[in-house]
Length: 67
Image (cartoon, rainbow, N blue to C red; front, side, top):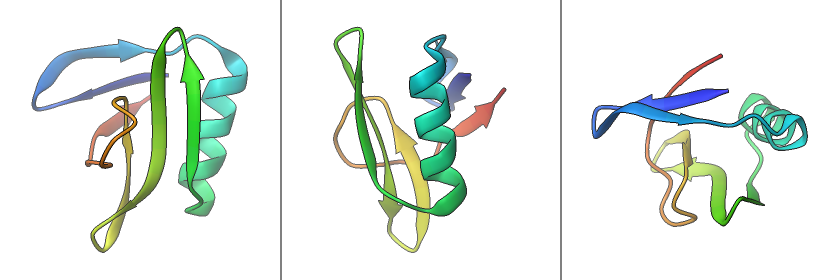
């Protein structure tokens, strides 16, 4: 899974299939998730009135997700 946004046009790529699946399921079903992969906390969750993903483990911001 490749994730990038306006603040990081190069983005990051997640190759761990379990993390990709967990993030995909969380985003699909609007559930919260925090996953640790290679020292990075990935978080999916509510963002104001929408849903998003973050690679900081902090506040979720909107990112464009490309497979």
